[in-house]
Image (cartoon, rainbow, N blue to C red; front, side, top):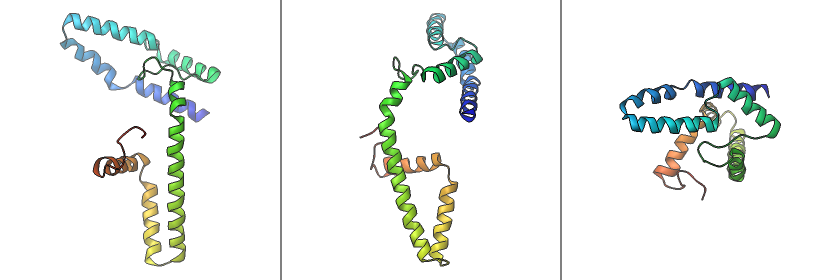
Length: 165
């Protein structure tokens, strides 16, 4: 619970400190006054709708209060008009399928490699398997996923780049 709260707070602070917020304000000086005024009005409406005009501490405490008391993650900024809870609910089954397939795949590969290494204890095959396993553990999952996506989706065209089915 403490780690979740700390990670949530760190995410909010990192988003608040992101350089894009200041860069967007500076680039608007190049626009005509009319377009600039309309864009500023639209941004103000969005800020008010999502509470971005409030201080970061107030936004964070409101978010955490809603999350802990009602389990509400709020409205999605990306999928306008949809609750983040609904989006999570709609995609949970797909995520569970992917997770279970990954677990099955990892378990099968791990048991097979473990049996081969055990049957060839001290031989070169054992050493090669051990080195490969240590390397696989050391590679961050996002790097491995990117490489896997590159080969499976772009190079070999076995799966879609995104989506399900």
